[in-house]
Image (cartoon, rainbow, N blue to C red):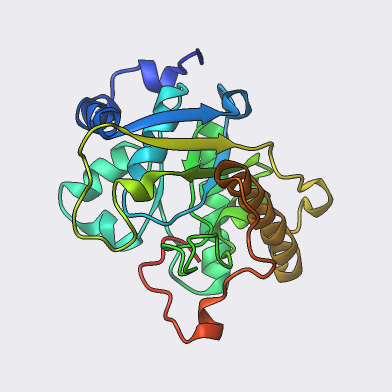
Length: 251
């Protein structure tokens, strides 16, 4: 069993959230977590999962909580301006998404990554930025948010894949399938993506593109293992299929 970090054992709003979220996910899903040792017991990390169901964040949050870490996410900057919710997001250390110019976004990313390292916190970033548009639920083209954050602070970038959540709530489905038995949900955590040759190049688009390709390949490989099948040779690109990428979580 993973040793709980101080951020989990110290009283916080996460305890209150766990009282409601953990029992719900435990009732709906039978989580099988592989690669537990790859999530650091302490220190900063950027965890990058695939995303195909609106229920994914709760599944990932419970998996991270069970492994002894506090699940912090990147969230839209506008949410931080909502009374009560914004206070809760700030108190739990959630990270606002940069929505400004490139220079300002780069500065904000550096501040965020420095804070993660300083406080020894991890953050969960969906590199696709929204639910995948791939018809078969494979990871689609990624964005630069996760890799930019990792490179800015020289933080471990850890790929994750989960599969089975769609049997509880399908993509865009209105309802939940909670009838027993519990649905099997696999959570696979991979080795940190090697970014050593790109260190110090967080401001270069070419470096971000290379890092992002490595990350998405690692996530896809984990998902192939969970599904027991090969992903398409070409990753889905919404712009090539006339689809708008709405509801983005990072850029």
